Image 1: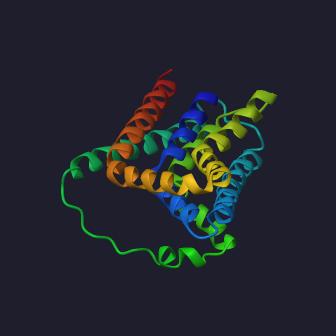
Image 2: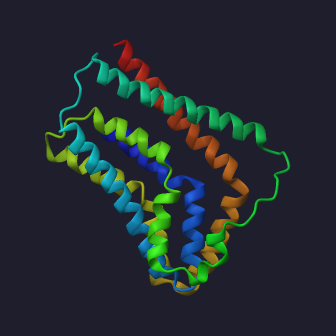
Length: 217
């Protein structure tokens, strides 16, 4: 469980689309305060999902080879297949001219955005498909030791790691952070496809391969 959750959490924090949204928030006027609110909303939504999953399952994972157990594995296989398909689609789109996109309304007034709005924006940008893979992993787990609860904490922490690092850097180095955020956003804009392809393939093949192995064995 620990390795699965850490890998899923790492892919979540590397997802370029929500990361770009956070960079825009952090680079705006009063960005440190709004960035902290964004992170709080991000972590709160993750914590609610994790806690809700544990409460709903009653900390009683389904027995192996039963219908609920196979259903959880089927969900992970489906998510893995979707991730691989996303990677293939992005690979085919590379090099082709992209249609100009309209700027989202929330970006046009980002300097006047309130921390409350930033907090609400975080769950909207959350990659819920990847979070669902984490939920399916938690469903299969028995939280019987302190290591298990640390694994859940680490999942939330790793899924927020880059956001926390940027927030701290912006707070302690406000002058240098603006240039860093600008260059980071520029890099993401030019490497979004590559990042999506790599993280989707790695996690997709892992979920499919391990889940099929568990079904067979």
